[in-house]
Length: 324
Image 1 (cartoon, helix red, strand yellow):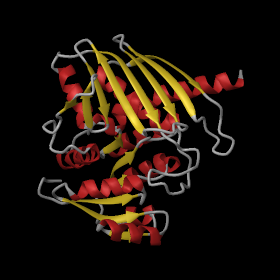
Image 2: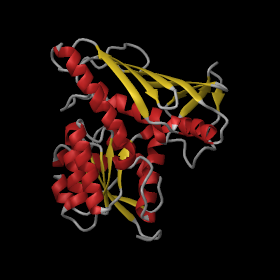
Image 3: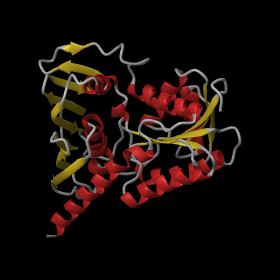
Image 4: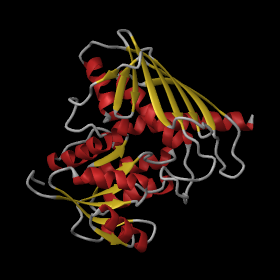
């Protein structure tokens, strides 16, 4: 594909993150969202009209059978991610799948095998790699100006009912380990530039209706000695989201998505870090650029697979503790 050609993208998922991608893709030159898939044709048509993109389509299979789609972005329920990623690749479509790639290591490895067979661009939405706040820290590390000693991370939501980020009922259940912890596990290894060599986890009681742990604590240690302490909760009735504290040898920084502060809450200007201050847009720009340039993207399946190996090891640890 040449730089002059329009990249034609289908968006699967008409929820909160589908809307974020639709907005981001509008800001990328030479990109057209040609089709939208949602939970029903009516929902897809409504989403396409609301977002001013493409056409509503009844199913992903219909999209994959068309010739006017080059790539697919999957913002669908977690349980669908692996099978849909493989289906896109086998249909000859480049694919970006929202986090998590899968909710089992076997499925994640199957996705990598499909990518290797097809040679297509296959990327996972590990957005923290792209947030300007984390990019700013990464550049200091790469310049030899900063070394991480500890990352202290809080991932907090109030989700005692099965609702999405827009407050609407979900047809699937979110997961602290395979979804939310994946962001931090991947980012910790990425920022330190060192593989995770030790990982421990404990979890709180299982919710009687949702069937998941509502609280979890994870400890990580990288080969270079840096550590990470991650607290996760669906019970937190307070500020929502994920907050990263970088404790390093030459400073402390607090990252809140695309914004960055010193340890004393002084704002740091990250507007010049990249072409946008929106991490989702930067993630989508990387996907499009990799397609145009025929290269591996940052946050490719191959690059993030080690994260899912760590998650699988933590799940085995939690399962063993529950049955002990």
